[in-house]
Structures are given as C-alpha cells and as structure tokens.
Image (spheres, rainbow, N blue to C red):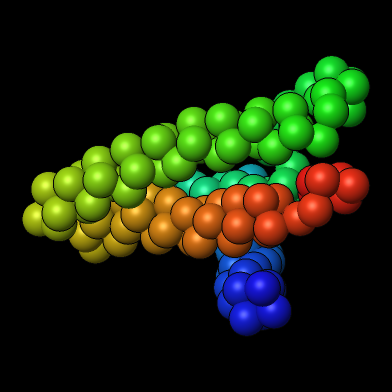
Amino acid sequence: MDILDRVSNVLNQWTKYLAGVLIAAMTILVFLQVLCRYLLKAPLDWSEELSTFTFVWMSLLGASIGLRNNEHPRLDLFFNFFSQRMKKIVTLFCNLAILFMLIVLFIYGLKLTTSMKSQLTAALRYSVSFVYIVLPISSAIMFIHLAIQTVRVFGQKDQETPR
C-alpha cells in the first residue's frame, strides 16, 4: 500500500503544480486582455482563446485532484448512517460508476483527439488536438487515483471508516 500511496501522492503533486501554473497563466492572460482592450485599445486576438484552453485543462486536472482527495459529490449525511459493510458496498458501486465514466471519457477523448489533429485553432493556428488531449490524460490520472482508493477501502478492516 505504501508504494501505491507514493505513486498517488507524486502524481497528485505534479497535477497540482500544473493546475497552479495554468491558473496563473489564465489570470495573467485575462488581465493582459482587459488591459490591452480597454486601456490600450488594441485587443490581443489570441489571449481569449489561450485562456479558454488553459481553463479547460485546469478544470479537468482539478477534477483529478478532487477525486484523489475523495471530494466528489455525495450525500455524507446519509452515507454516515450506513454500517461499515454497507459503506464499502456503496463505495464500490460509486467507484464502478466513476470507472465507467472514466473509460468512456478516455476512449472518446482519444477518438476526439485523433480526429481533430488536422483542425487548427482560429487565433493561434495550432492543432485543436492539443486541447482535447487533456481528456484521456485526466481520465487516466483519475483512473489511477480511483484504483488506489478502491484498493485502500477494501484493504481496511471493518472497524475503520473509509476515507
């Protein structure tokens, strides 16, 4: 379990770092866009497009951080009334549902990425596939975190509370 936790921690730290860089870049881009548009009266054509793409990347990488920290939506009020055995069953059901969605996201993200490789963005003129590649990347990261969480939950004794 120690190796799995280290893998998850390292992956999560890199994802947090990248998401932090992306939010900083997006903030700077939006600030420059406002500055150039309203003060200099010379808007930047590419900044809106790039800030939108950084937002998409940041959101999907942030979802993997949320999944790693077990912060996906659920009703803890009802979940806390379950017995330990029932908590494990509900957790397994939730993890299987998330796994199904991650598989769909990964497969169709790859298909979308490969089908868009020849399409160029309007302002920056680079391949749209650079934007869509975050779908399979983030779903793979989330799959790793989900697998580790599932192993951790089912490796616990019944007295312990699942995280």
